Length: 582
Ligand SMILES: Cc1cc2nc3c(=O)[nH]c(=O)nc-3n(C[C@H](O)[C@H](O)[C@H](O)COP(=O)(O)OP(=O)(O)OC[C@H]3O[C@@H](n4cnc5c(N)ncnc54)[C@H](O)[C@@H]3O)c2cc1C
Image (cartoon, rainbow, N blue to C red; front, side):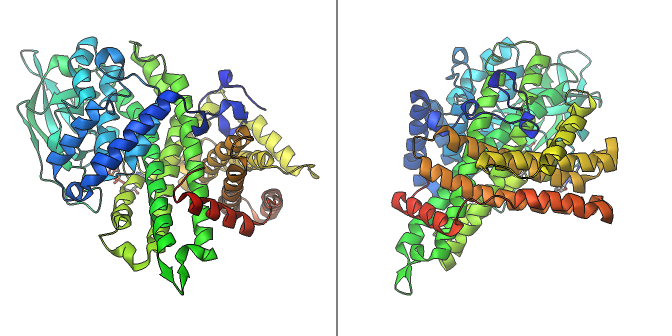
């Protein structure tokens, strides 16, 4: 079944295919997108990277100066409507800025945190007065913001907050008490979006200003990486918050906290993709110069294979990021003036699965690429003088914040299961159809698009097996859920890569097809590994081998030509450009 764009809904890639025309790709950038990319790129290379050491040494005054400069350039206001001093650009522009700034890690975290989770709660859930008061200042950088959800006893289980808000006897102020942990930008923030339970029960959001009596900060945390981004606890001791600083409705703080995190996860995926490109570029430049055994490191075919695999993984990450950006834009383009918060929340949640994948795939791509790039630097990679050393330390946090990758993985099959239980998706029919297709022999053609169909069918077959075994209790069996999520992530990444290559058959077709094939080979292996582990753990011996044979036969039937030649070609293309370019 192939669906057109108009009838799409969140996570439907899990059970139906798309057509290439439905996918937005970087090749579709408009002049406006190219312009904001250029502005962001110039700012990062001329202003931010020139101060890398100062920022790494935690000169937060420098970080603030840079944030204000970013504000002057419009780089803080891309997602704020024009009437509130922003640029009111689309989510593709948001992705572009996130990606370009992402390569600066510590500074990038500060800027993205400000524009995304610290500002969006007001943009989408603020009253007109709150928007008038704060958004122009947040867009210009006059005010900088923080987002305060985590607490000592409420991390992944964020709604277990123990921070309380009690209305004072005069009815003029909420009195907040509690501690927020690991808060990015805390040291220089003017506004803090704080979540607290009114009367210990009703989880709600508040805009707290830095000078409100009762707000103080803990000492700067000593971190492994992203040192250029401030992290402190925010302590609220009888903090007096005027009643008109309640954000949204009493008891609806979760609608703000969790939905804003969806966009945060998308943004984090963009930032990680930008970081991965930068790490690859460092590897290309270093290996192209450094000689051993009388030849450059770049000339060794083992290096070339590493470069090809990194390129292909980044290409997949980039493809799924911009595909998701456009889906988010579709869902959210009319939300700036929407006053019904239920509608705002619903639209922001529509692509929660895709946003979770952006976060997981992006952060794991960055970790893989940074690790391999450091390895290609040899001993130099371990020395602080080389920027890859810092990138290695900086990248690790991305698998932890904005919801750990485990928590994000659990969300992916959970979404499908909920839809199935509500009758919105005919899961049983889809599983039966997948089984039939997997059992039918003798396929005429085995294209990249066929491979996507195969991965989807394997996913649905595995969902069917897991559901039959665990029933409605499936979500309690996390070992199975995580493996289903692994397959789903590979499905989205591989499909985004394939559709992008098919869409652009005319332009630079060769390199995109090569990258797609190299990524697909890896995806098919990973899907097979997750599916095998799942089936081995769930089915009795008798049925096990039959189902395993079906899966292995299907996934191993694809042959995209010699990976040896193809990967050397990809490496050649990369060394010609000396940077990620497709
Ligand atoms: C540098 C930095 C900056 C941060 N910035 C902010 C910020 O600005 N604002 C903010 O509010 N927070 C911020 N955080 C907090 C961050 O979002 C949390 O650390 C993160 O959500 C994880 O929570 P936790 O640390 O309590 O880990 P825990 O929840 O204790 O998790 C520990 C481990 O248990 C696993 N786990 C937890 N629950 C489950 C489950 N149900 N099933 C399976 N496994 C599970 C996790 O995946 C993880 O591997 C920041 C953290 C850091 C380190």
